[in-house]
Each structure stands twice: as C-alpha cells, then as structure tokens.
Image (cartoon, rainbow, N blue to C red):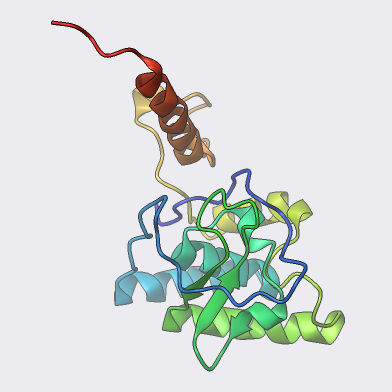
Length: 194
C-alpha cells in the first residue's frame, strides 16, 4: 500500500531542550498526508499488528502515516509529547526544516499504537527516552514497513534507480530537494527583456 508520505529524511534529530508546547501543525511547507479511509486504516492497523510486536516501531509507522513526518522528526517525540486527552502528538523541529515544532492530531486507529509505545517507554526507561524511534532505528523501521507492505509512493518505472521490485524509500524527499534547489536558481535569473 503506498500510504507513507515519507520515512527517511534529513531533519533536526533532537527534541527541544526547554519545555515546548507546540501549536497545531500549520502545513506551510508541505501538504498534509491524505487521511486514511476507515477500511484502509483497519487494514493498516492489522498489518502493523502482524508485522511487529515492538510497540515503538509499530507506533512510529502509525505516526508516520498521520503526520507525514520523517524518521528524524519521529525521533524527537518523548512520552510527554503524546497527549491522550487531546489526542495530539508533538514533534519537534528546532531547525524549522519542515513544520517547526508542531502538534499533530492523532487519528483514532493510531491511538492504540501510541498508547502502547508510551506505556512501553515509561516502563523501560522513563520520560526522556524516545517515544517512537531512535535515530539508529532506521533499518528496523524500514524492515517493519516492508513486512507490513507499507511504503511511500514509488517513481514511475522509467525513473527508477534501483532494481525492479526494490522500494525507493527516499524518492519523494529527492523530488522535494530538487524542487527547493530549483527555486533560488529561477529567482537569480535577471528578467528577460522583450
């Protein structure tokens, strides 16, 4: 299922050092992920449940689906960043590469995974441990995503760089980077005279 907007990227990998109460996400720099329909959300939840017994990895993939966040953004979340009462998840982006520090609404189907991750994290290490994924969890997270058959949209066959059937996890990020690099080049050109 091509439901992941992104999973790998190169954002700010650390949470805010001071207490941070992020505002709701504004989606200034990228479009929000398309919400999953009820049947798709049910299939995703079943796939995540079957793919991994590790609560943090399953919750990280669930969060990637409703936030569109990269692994580095997901790694900034701590147990205190998940608010069960408000059904929000705060992710931090001190460098403001993407959305800045922002609170994302948690879709009901994903709340189960986040609650399990929060309980697990508090039991093993307390409030300052990563809630969803550590920066070194990329390989494990990609394996769980592949096992659950959840992946980002793939490039057209003619533009594929890897072998047939191989998932290109960072294709969307490469497209976005190319677009950002092209913007200053267009602005730098002098206006044409007619």
